Length: 199
Image 1 (spheres, rainbow, N blue to C red):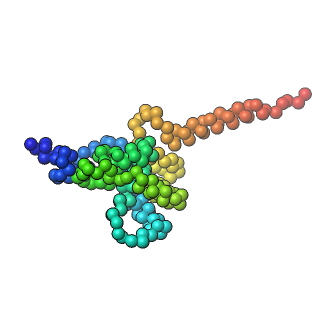
Image 2: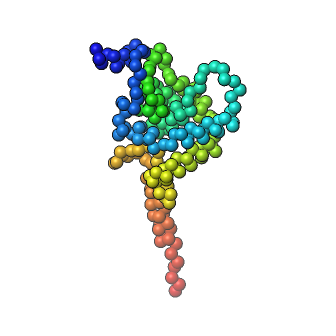
């Protein structure tokens, strides 16, 4: 009977809410990714930018989805290589995605197909301009340097932790291969352009 009490909200949409942090282990890659980002500064930058560019004329209608949720979904969508529909569906079913979105407790309404509609995520993405994206990247880089996670001399951003031995291509691997290829081609160029000896 005790288990039924804890699962009651999944079965009937009622009961005590679940604390998301209790179900996402600290070793989970999505949790590790979420814990590295300075969410407060990122959300403040987005809110400030949107307030200047898109002032809200009225407070009527449904309450807006939190900026943290939309920003986390947009970033996760690219990290996990999902479509809008897939990431919005994962928000409903995946506790790690809920954790990354800053959702602390879950109380499911089974009749509601989405927490966030894919169309809303698309609208949010269209509002992210190049200046805002550069500001968000600068905030992330500054936070990583402050924590000592990276050296300011050689800053290469790879936003998603991967297991050692993974075949996933990241910016550091691409940069290494490009430098290696460049040095090989410059050596070939030097040997083919040697001056001929005069007779």
